[in-house]
Image (tube, rainbow, N blue to C red; front, side, top):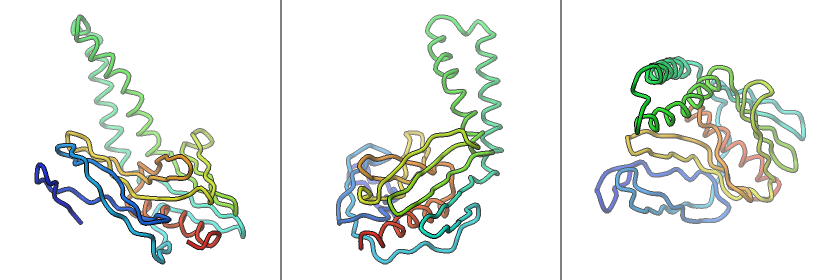
Length: 213
């Protein structure tokens, strides 16, 4: 579904508000002209997790459960190629006379970004997202093997989950699962749309039996 910006008249996808305790509005900006936009969302209905998408392993342990999602490995090929090209260009720039004057600022900036692309490729190749739940809340891990970062949420603090798309000025997009639970954070950037939607609905469906919403 698309909407039209009232200022620049460009079409853009409407943000998908997946689940919310109460009807509310979400703020966003037009990806073209950055005009502030607002979208209404409604209280969630009887959404239930659909069939398990490819790349997700779901385990039920009685009162506890876990869902492990693996990024599409095919995406890593493109990212590794770009990372190699990026690193080669940065290395070449430092080895030439370009690393002088104002140009060195650009080269330092490009050098700082190099590990970001390498880490992205590593996550796409060997990484995983693990969501584990219990009667009290959920634990969300992102990383490779035992190395990574974790976030904890309590069911009584979980008020909203949405599938969010962030737009860059050059047409780039970053999709993620946005969670509001006392504090907000995002995860699942390297997953497919089906995987993100499944995890979002799964989290909410595990919460509802405890709170009746």
